[in-house]
Length: 340
Image 1 (cartoon, rainbow, N blue to C red):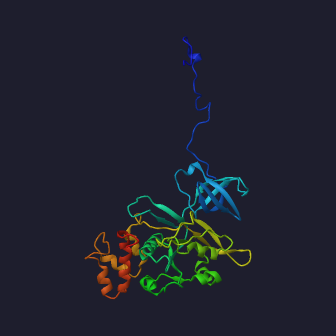
Image 2 (cartoon, rainbow, N blue to C red):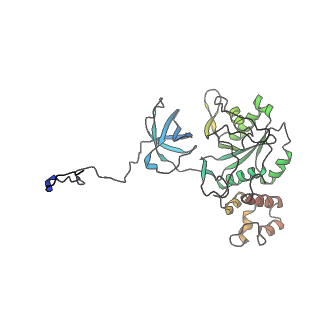
Image 3 (cartoon, one colour):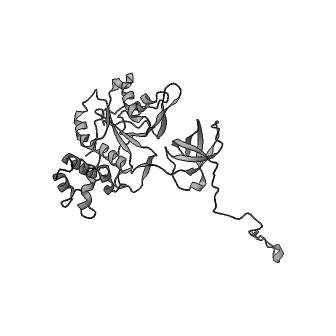
């Protein structure tokens, strides 16, 4: 279809207005200096629940953030309707610099990093002593991820009424990882929650663990007014069912109605913890007694080869041999699957 007739002149041609005649495009974005400070509690299908002062506000990511991910634990700048009223939606326009980032990959061949939580300073690795049985390789991988992210690890062993914690603790004693042992009866009467709570005060703690180990049950005991769904372990496979489907940050309750000093971040159960994103050379930083001994190591030393200087360092009495064994076991986790 012709837009103009057969005989047209210049006056008939439509000309787009120039810069002065229309609003010019610009890449300059507002700074949003008046944005309120928020803390991301959970993320669900593009909607983010944030804590703004004492209100929970539903928000979405602003377009100017592009592909930048916003995750649980992020401290953000929010504009728009911050009343927290039903059916209101604010915008997250800024993500503050993160103090820490806990990452994982689906497996060791996957190049895509997944951010688990941001700004945590402690990683509670929850594992059952039985039903399902403990998986030391998965614990090792979580420890490597914690050391790489500069998080303090905490080992939480559950179901001690079904099996002894002694053999597993002997394995991790050289690493000096703090631990708490709990039983199912202690979760009921609250004694286990109190012992764990002592380790969480003043911290932002992310909880990770295999499905069915009692991770969410423990979180429910710590924050009783925010009960999350729990599941059971399959009697045939020995695996738990995923009942926690998204990470959720919960404030530790304090005395009376006042909030406590600390946060718990419950994360979905994992069946693998890929370490493709981690440079093995950074793991040595978690072993300050061994790190000086690497000064004489050959270039790009894996710390598990014939010419590694750490063997001589330990032989000279500068560090315990069990510490070197633990380091090499952690470094080897990238070469083995969790179930090996």
